[in-house]
Length: 111
Image 1 (cartoon, rainbow, N blue to C red):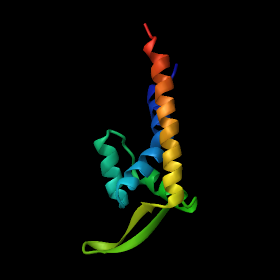
Image 2: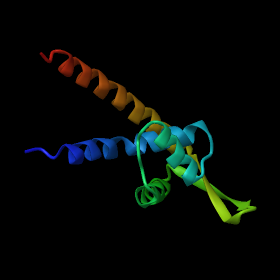
Image 3: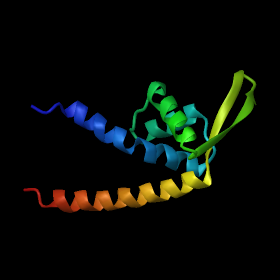
Image 4: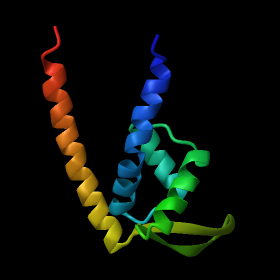
């Protein structure tokens, strides 16, 4: 039998990069801001998932960051898209739109 929760998790994980890049494209973002935005959309993500993803995206030169002093603790790292990140986001959005259309066409014929 299929583990439904595992299937849902895999689907969400597959679109995580697209969602994170989209959030950062709107405005420079601090990781907790990204988590809040994801939660607003019912896309739950935890720090243990987000931080490695941000590091991977930064290492791929899709993100850059700057440090900002904080009045309530250590300096904060704010992320923004690089020009390569903007290009990849655009390609991912196009791929997502094609995928949504294909899935909708396929599932609309359900009885």
